[in-house]
Length: 365
Image 1 (cartoon, helix red, strand yellow):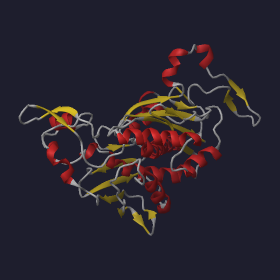
Image 2 (image 1 turned 60 degrees about the horizontal axis):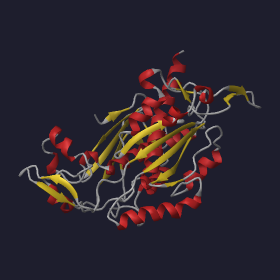
Image 3 (image 1 turned 90 degrees about the vertical axis):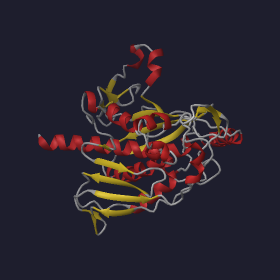
Image 4 (image 1 turned 120 degrees about the vertical axis):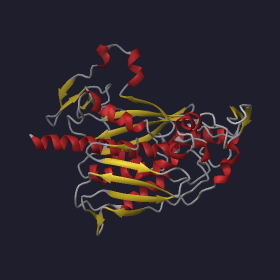
């Protein structure tokens, strides 16, 4: 339920308002010296910091309790504990019997009868994604050392769109620029327009959604396994575990329906370095679930935040009476702004698991 991965396995525990959350990582290489500066940098990107994000700020002072000696991995499970320090359970007292629209409250209560006794989103909360960022940071450290890089930008917030990647050629310099940005965009002129869109929704006690576009470069040919462990299968599985993610597409995705096969077949040629590449990259660097050596391109849809100050209709589960509620507390008017960094981390972890699988397969031959 809360464990995933084949070559690097992670288990997460905790809730949005529990005393702490934890991450257990199995399968990391022995002797890996964890770059904790990198981990802290990535956590800072996810952390709220201005008027566009939630007022709940956690310091994310994690502790590594097992699996490390003198800063390097021992080969045993690495356990990382992250305390929840900025908790306000009183924000949810009036909702003890009322499921919040757009949240997991109602189905979770049916599946786990004591769920409504908890506060916030529990295990379904976006707070849990701090653990995604930690494992993503470790995966980034390992993969960057292998020449594999992941970069994401905010492709859209509500009606404001950034331009999209040119999928045939995505250079390392662009990935580095996105990595250095707090509000990563391909066209920086769109930032004030996106910010205005979010602030307008916030002023109306409402929220807006968005799209994150991600590119993976340096991935060797043949990463992935046919059918259930295809690159698309593994990454989609992980991305849909991020709260508020409602759609994932690779390459041209849903736009394939508008284009004939003669246009999207991605013909091959040898480039000046003698490497086989494709003229176009409509399939996003993936065929048959395997990487082709071209940049992998995908997009993730993040829905508008469900916790808003506008009146919403629900029911009181004790009295069975209809009610109208507003959700108080501290929430992002647009999850996408911080979500871009969570998507990046999640993709890094998924790719690490897949790459180590390919390396293990080659070692057995």
